[in-house]
Image 1 (cartoon, rainbow, N blue to C red):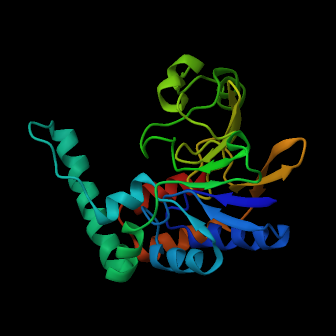
Image 2: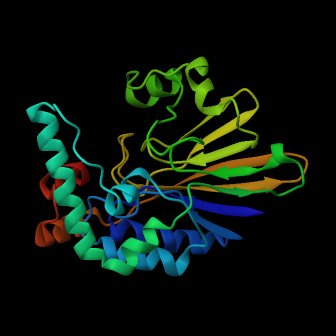
Length: 257
């Protein structure tokens, strides 16, 4: 069994097209998406419609939830927090208009997780979520050693004990997720933690689009391959400059790195 899993597209159609083309060449048994399809990019509707036509499994991410259920602004916020909430609302309204009611409703009906069992043993199962097995907001970070090697510093310190509240009730042998845009594989006790993100907006200093290819081998368990795919960032930057979605200047900077 081979399963391709991608995550965190964030409205970048050029990157998504390139990833899906590479996935097709790998000929997996299933294609899964682990959340955050539309938020922030120039072509959210085209991304969603392409994904719906070429993907078998979907779970929702935190920004998918922002679109159909934007949270009210808390009371007694600072000026900075108020500006951030207003930006969220403006982006959500823009995306609702771009996507149309049918697509927004479709996003609202996505499941939180999807579980795949290659055998009858629960500890062999693959669990697909956006961020962690409990919610779509708290991240699972790479080990401090990995961060130091890749980033030159520890950006998100997180010990095994700090992960316990998120993972102690999990029964799957491997969890595949995105949310934090730094692909990596970490072990927590007997569980493989496979961050397969991201198609867009990388945080690891490598601007190629990324996804994971997970393969089940009888007697060996799950193997995780990180796929890195170069795409035409110049083309996507030109489209951002033409469409000018919310926060388009910030996106231009991110794609230039």
